[in-house]
Amino acid sequence: LACSLHAMAAVAAAPRFDRGIVSTDPTGAIASEDRVWLRSSDGECSYEKPQICSMAWSLDHQLHHHLYAAVPNGGPIAILKAERIAVHSATGFTISEWKWESSRALRLGWTHAHELVAVLESGRILLWSMQGERLADFGLGLACEANGLRDCALSPNGAVVLTQTLRLFALLSFEERTLVPLADPLLSSPPHAMIALEPPVGSGQPPEVLLATASRTVLLVDAAEAQDQLLTAGPFASMVISPNGEFVALHAPREHALLVYTTDFARRVSTLRLPAGKATALRQMAWCGTDALLALIEEKEGAALLLIGPYGDCVR
Image (cartoon, rainbow, N blue to C red; front, side, top):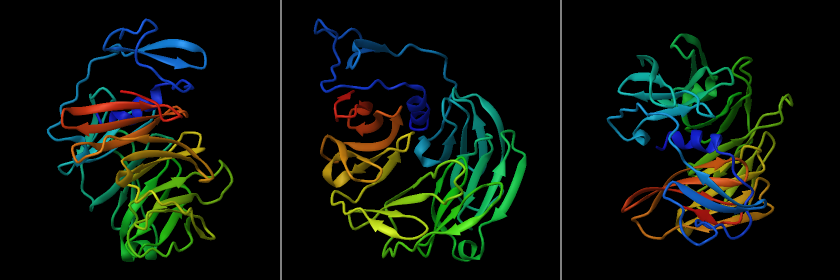
């Protein structure tokens, strides 16, 4: 479920909600457990969740125990577990599988050409075809390979890596393999979360990076400087960027809240208070279109999905 959340969010076209999302039909009765009514800018409309195809997944462990990467819009899903890497269709059918013979992997991802990317803790990057053919194996330079990597943010074009010495480097392209050092964020401890903001296509500029720090704020880091966004609701456990790059959603466990800001942090767009208590945990969140968030939460009763509109209203 956690792995398919990105595919679900990418496929779903989120309506532009007004205030006052409701989950009942106009008569006040719930239409069915598979249908919800939403009030959008175009008036009342209903959304159903019919079964499109049968699922063939057979996982012996929860997916969050493994490394995985999903191609957007219902594409293939790669899973690394038990020294084997497998590529599945979104419905769970195996496309290919091969033995993992490299050192410890830090992150998996996909390029625009649907090549599988693996970033290793040793500071190397591997690329495979979807059928398991090794396409590339290259290092990220002395600073990364000598110290090793602590974290990584992947995009279809390149990567941003954080070394064990808490320095940032940007790989601008998997083809040209140009590595650019970013400004020193002067971290005293590892960040709680890290994401990259992609530059305009063809600009040749390195990406900007958002770091959620232990000091409850967020740093915006580029090649020249690290800017403190002066937030106080952190530390933030996770962050996700909207598909159009205009908004960032942050999970603040200390505040039991999901916060949405513009990416320049000039304005807070919405706040959603989550149920407080140790029995409730946010497992994952992803954007649904550019207006709504899809959040997977774990409760005492089991897992639940929340569809959250731009004003903080939600449908469960």
